[in-house]
Image (cartoon, rainbow, N blue to C red; front, side, top):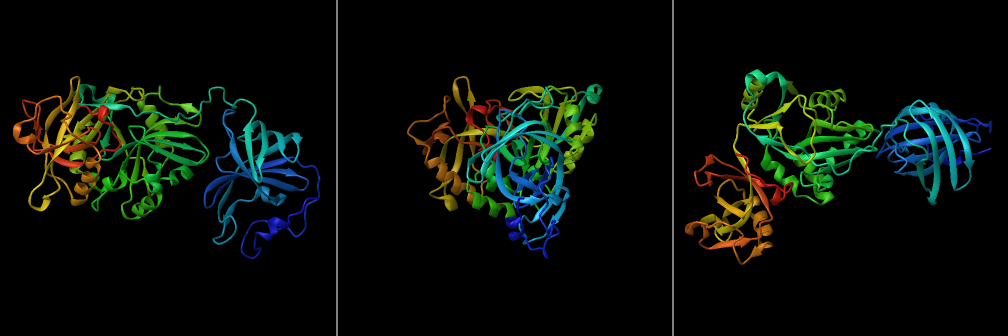
Length: 478
């Protein structure tokens, strides 16, 4: 007969509503199993097998594996009483395992092998079926492996390196084609591909840079989704006190690589993740599904939390969508063909950016010194666009900077110093006077009035760096 000494030692019977049987159960050869979803300090799943009158238990940080190619960690914990197999509810603050427990699956199992280091079982539950093996890797650490194929023959794992689909700049579709298009607001933020696996969230920027550590407030999305794998296309946005996107505020968050600093900024300058496309869910790729179906599937998930939202999309209302974006002071709208498939990493005319504000991504090729209050620092940035012949000069920008931006730019540009101009085209004498040249690595964004006949920016204003972009990704958009 197994004992529950360790289970009782860790719990206060007067402080928890968990089962606390006075006597151990007899070893009657039962064959039940239960998997409980446990929202504690970190989301995990508790996997329990009835054996010798107790529930032999493991904590699975990422749940039961769906794919035989991927093993999951299983941490062996103390045996639990059989009564725990039907337990769900709240474990109070201050108690061991404090948090919410719910039954995720339950059923019967058959034992194929049971030893101190390896256990093979066949599960027959409501959600989980098949052969699994648990094997010890050291101390309390075990692994759980699915021995047979996923239950669904078409099940595929969520991709890890999906590149976002890109839009072309244009105007609203003709009124006669309006019904074939859907419309979303264009948010002034940072594009992100979001992958959720086993309740854990990872974020990658448009240039495939892992930015997960920069946005800790978005981790809760994993708990909202649970055990299913999912991949989203989304925008990370900072809002101002009036509820409008503020790209300047987002600058403080985009460059952070320190987890401690990111946690502090998450409180003072929180971001919101705006989910606008669902690319993969629960073992099913949705890339070849029409946009209208992907949006419906996304909205069915009802993902709406303090730090993530699913903003509305509208079909066949282009002119109205533009008016709404203008009234809200937004950058514009995105028009998307309702029947379009998702093309990772491709720029497609199936998605069209309709802008209220003219902006352009630029590559920094140099800078000139400031005067007055900016003496000794940056006065203007010298900007270019990639072309077949090299970096083409498109003008300079000397407005729109905050002091913090100037200090950050100064530090970054000094590390990129070079002796010769990186531009393939000749600069006007006034612009190249006392210029400091840099390797064309940094990408930024400007707002501007229009393009001149000689392809220079008229009245540009600096908006901020774009660490989510690389120089070779920059194209002329307007």
